[in-house]
Image 1 (cartoon, rainbow, N blue to C red):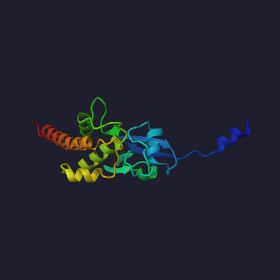
Image 2 (image 1 turned 90 degrees about the vertical axis):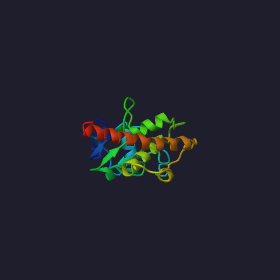
Image 3 (image 1 turned 180 degrees about the vertical axis):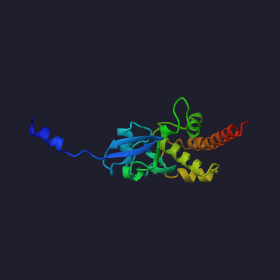
Image 4 (image 1 turned 135 degrees about the horizontal axis):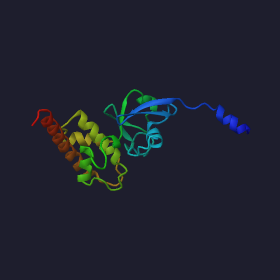
Amino acid sequence: MHSSDSASSDVPRPPGVRLSVNGRSHTVEVEPAAPLLFVLRNDLALNGPKYGCGLGECGACTVLVDGVAARACVMPVRGVIGREVTTLEGLGDVACPGPTQQAFIECQAAQCGYCLNGMIMMIEALLRRQPAPDEARIRQELRHNLCRCGTHVEILQAARRAVALHAQARETACAKRSGQ
């Protein structure tokens, strides 16, 4: 046995951290101070949230934590223990996108697409809090999300469409519950 072999086996492994992401429980061996973004992308292979600025200022890394928008690049894993994390992948998938995702698809609100995760997650968080925001509220919500390609007109159109699609989804759910 080489001395390097014994040394590597003596190195303590990080503790197992239990996380709830997109409705599923995961145990990952990471330091509690590790940025949530790195765990989502590297350990859980969830690539919706993007690394943009690393400072929590651009919005590309946005996720929902208990339904509230949060910047995953500056949030340590310990900050989400016992809480529900939702990523872009948790809103829907290719076969069945969620209403906010569908709105962005319909409105073709992407050019390079790098900012879309943050834009979609911010609108999703807004609509969970306030189902019928006006244009001013939508703009206010997105003011700290950066889009370098300049697709703001399409993004705002998609946000307005998301409001309508969420309203339709609520109406459909109510009709199903009442047996109509």
